[in-house]
Image 1 (cartoon, rainbow, N blue to C red):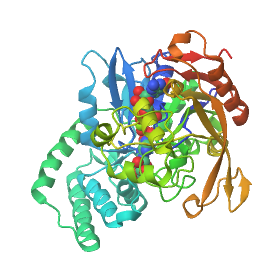
Image 2: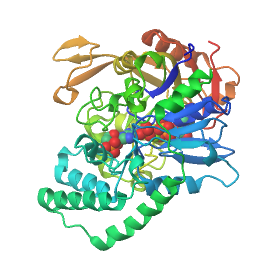
Image 3: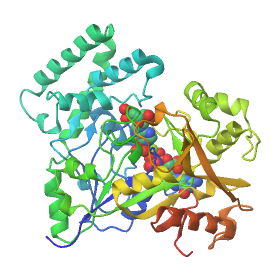
Length: 459
Ligand code: GDP
Ligand code: IMO
Ligand code: MG
């Protein structure tokens, strides 16, 4: 094999860092033999791409749809067939992507009852809930570990329907016995109709082993991009457990997610925002407005927020209102669930932790433009825990009182686009500080949602 390696593109925070835009930008430069592959997660992901003035959100299909590269749904994924079929239908007719798409036989299938198990178990947890996306991700991966999952390779087998019914009945039993939940069979029948429509669609996609796809591309000296879903801090083992997703979101997940040896996985490209957001529960040291924000985001809908805060002030005295302004300016509403994303300042210790786990040697700083209008921008440089300053990430953040220490930067006047093609000196100082603190080069910064809204490195 030549020296080409798989390049993981990984979110370095709690997801929604702008991976969709980042991967689409890379994809626009790839050729027809290059490859973009998802290696974990399912339709809990929501990857936004602006293309031709239109906004698209992809949940399962890799973010290379509008390019020329091959796209592959890898072995480590969980696939909801109905959601996949629906997503494929949303892609404009003129875009030929089906002839470029393949799927691994090892990818796990999400059943309608997995969604029920997800939502019912979250309900039972009450205040201890994880805040899952409700897409059945955890129960689908659980079935893999229980060694009873249905996989894409099973759908062409004669006994698939029988296996499906057996697993559905197991799920119904669990719902009844463990959670006291009686399944609504009429509703389930309707969902099954969509499920089998999805299975039919899935059957039309070529089934190829992920490792075969990747090795063929690398042998031909073509590029292979592994598109991460979620973010490093949501990794099942190294994220803030239990407030995590159910797969390995870090670069090591590329190996187990595609059946590849570590030797052919290269250094990563890490993507992060100029601030931090999080959807769902769990610790968030730099959250603007702290617990008040967490509770607000848990309970409120965007319509209620807009009504109460029609024009929130990014320079308000109250940090809670600043957090609302950041959410409004960044459009920080869940791309998959429509939930309010919690907002906060950039957290250097967490980013260092994520960079180290992923061996990121290039960084993309997204959404710098969202900080237009902030007179002061804070960056967390360390934590005070039990009176001691540290930059270490504790084993269980949720059990500790963490006080972030901040460095404060002056904001810039006007919009970043006013300075095109340069950046205001305050923004350059902010970027330079982040680079120096992280010890990794930022290859470009995002200055708006569309593919061309980027500023290549010049500083
Ligand atoms: P992903 O899950 O990492 O792909 O990110 P999401 O798509 O869930 O969320 C990122 C959001 O930020 C989307 O609405 C993007 O359109 C938007 N976005 C990405 N990069 C930029 C940027 O540089 N500036 C602005 N203003 N928006 C951006
Ligand atoms: P992308 O790929 C942000 C979060 C959920 C919840 C936790 C577990 O768009 O960055 P799950 O449904 O996976 O069991 O939920 O993980 N979560 C995400 N947060 N972006 C995502 O994906 C996410 N996928 C899952 O909010 O806290
Ligand atoms: Mg997202």
